[in-house]
Image 1 (cartoon, rainbow, N blue to C red):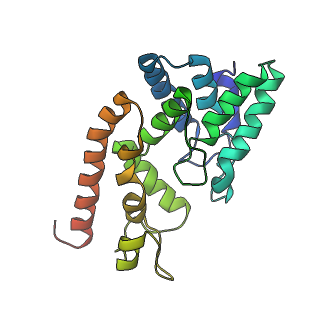
Image 2: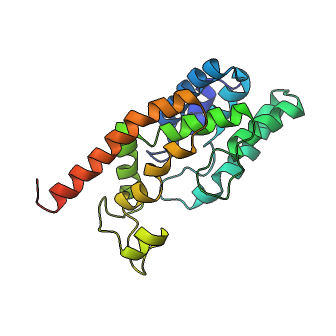
Length: 211
């Protein structure tokens, strides 16, 4: 089983949104969900530690394929530890299925659903605010820009329209709760989602000089 010390080294060059602090939060949330749901803890722990191990470098373009790259890296790590092929495959499925956007696998195992939920909870609430603003800074995009009608209707920006932190909230963050699987994660998401919505409502009021 990979250790926390090993995992810390894998994320030494990660950006501030997908760093070891993020991994630790996901790891502990995934443990809690796994205990409650009766999931295989070893599979869940290994997947949590390895899920962002590749493609998380500052301002890099590896995010789009990081779930595949991290799954391949997981196979290397776990093969070296002597894990059987079927358990390595189970960890890999968790990692490939944790991505929110549509090019990832759909979580089919309980362990994959647990990791997906734990990872997605970390984009909500106060941490979610901090992460989405930090990611906008990393990508050199604004924390707020008025979305175009095209974006509101289709989720696709007009030519030259920045994908601000608020755009990401509209496109992804406010929809996360509906994608969760486990009852505990859904319950936690309720309050976190409410906080996130209130934050962006206040942000827009202040941005427009109304508060």
